[in-house]
Length: 177
Image (cartoon, rainbow, N blue to C red; front, side):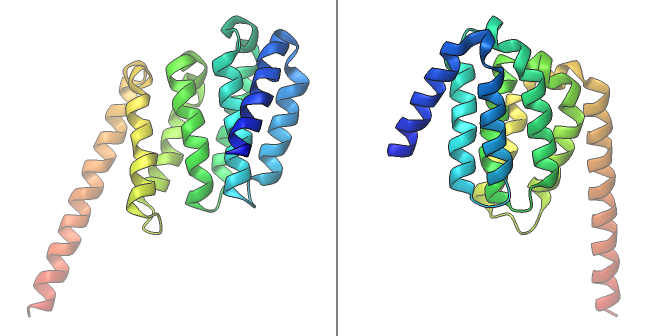
């Protein structure tokens, strides 16, 4: 509870800085980077500060920082090694998808690729997988903007499912021999 209140206080400070929030975001991102491989709880707190700052601040003042923040989050998703560290990033991406979809657009295919990878990882528990895949619904506007990418991804999924079905069919028939 204390960490949630502290995150809110920090977010209010960041939001109050408005267009002068550059050093604040740099400080928050440094915290994100240092916690990324270590502690999902501290990472969640830093990302909560980031997300709440963007929710509380004036969009036009904070918008210039969002592109850099999305790039950092995409790079972070590429480096993360455990699903518990993916979940706090996903929550921030969901917020960005609703408030800053135009900024996410540039990174959309990469983000989807990373999140699909995590959602298909057999080591990820079902509840965590559900939270990760829920993000795809938040990308509704982006799916519409990237229809050719969405179609290509759907075709790849269908081809993979067909190949899996064929390989399972072949292994079942060879085990029955």
